[in-house]
Length: 421
Image 1 (cartoon, rainbow, N blue to C red):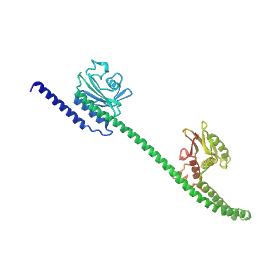
Image 2 (image 1 turned 90 degrees about the vertical axis):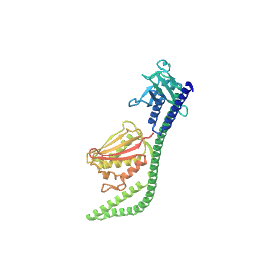
Image 3 (image 1 turned 90 degrees about the horizontal axis):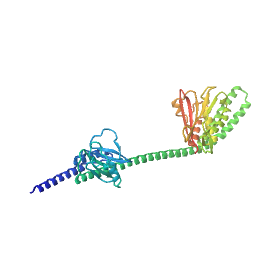
Image 4 (image 1 turned 30 degrees about the vertical axis):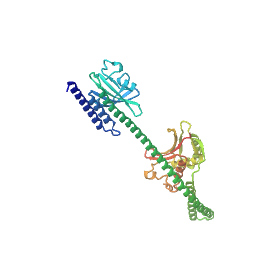
């Protein structure tokens, strides 16, 4: 056998072994969704080993910059982002084609290489749709040519890298979509729960209202007759002991009559007569009514209006009832001569908050949580429906009622109402 034939056989054997090595390395690469960095690192190392270059990087290229995703040598901590302008990598992205440069120092027309390197192999990374998203760049410190077989090997690895990056981005998009979808499902579920709770509450109150109306009607008629009889007897009985007993009976009967009225008010549906109200004008008008109340003779109220005009939709009469009840409770909690503060807060664009504050004794936490429950009262003569009715009216307006009580600041009742668009 001739020397030439032996050399050819040896070359073919080496090439076959090289290809086998490349196929074995490709087969060993195992990409799992979300593990992009280690996968690309193996690709960069594989190219450096197989085609015998000093440095290989996998880059993601966007908006004129390249970000190194993987490197066959340690580049240190942190992100490595570089401008594509004037670089060999930028030329590959611009051309969208493979580029080899035997000696970049001798042929600088295609762009600059990193300091200390001379030859270059750049392969664009394409998605399944043909979009160029990055490159695989192989650098060598000495000038050298890249054989057809070496380029084919690099291209095989580039296909794997492009597919992995594309899949990773799709996976990230899917994760983001799932998060958005889960958030929307959770939001919608919560909205349905709230709507269902409101519907159940409306049905419950409608049933209670119907029952309460019947009971109140049946009790009110004989109660009215009883009160009339007691008052008649008061005019004709002169005994002091009898007068005291009759007075007590009349007071209790009157309290029972008020309780029946409040039960009916609480139980029946809240039908609102809405109109556009200016919060400052509404509260100024309310102050006139409040100042005529008996509690106002020995107590004061300080009004701090909104700094600018704020309008909301509300039932004027029902909201007057709400704030009269809140201010009366505040006055009853303080000593004669003390001041109750009413302040308008418009720090939020979509809602206005009206605070009624008093410096009285703090309400214990175990009592605070029950204040808006029907028939719960801390007053000996109270019906326990005042704040319950107040809360129902506020909720019917799409608002919220909050009660806070502290040793230092006293008690603050806040009514939040949506602002009119």
